[in-house]
Image (cartoon, rainbow, N blue to C red; front, side, top):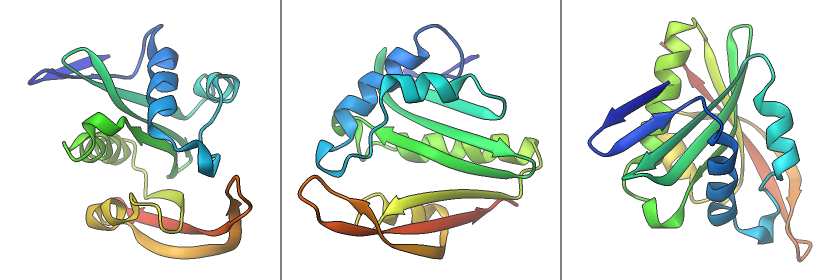
Length: 158
């Protein structure tokens, strides 16, 4: 389905979804941290039951996406990315609002995500209402060998 609003389009189906996801991911994720998924990984999960992919385009240009998986009454945000040129324009917030609305309709109780400590997106997650519920010490490893904790966050869907 495609929803339009002021030049923004939200797409959750279609042949171009994977291409959009890969284009956004390539531009959005810093290779130093090794967090981006490859095309095979994305393609493999996108067709599974409970998996939701949402892409936002602005004036026809891919701007951001999210990829989540819901099992029973819990949702895990697997990936969220916004192209650098569209950051701080409300793209990530709009994606989250769509995910939360979907979660409410589906009677989902929680949305979880895991993020690298010191990831700039942490501030956004806290503003949206996510709260820390756990940590994995030295979970992420950068290309130069530096280790980073993983922070597990939870959003309570009301």
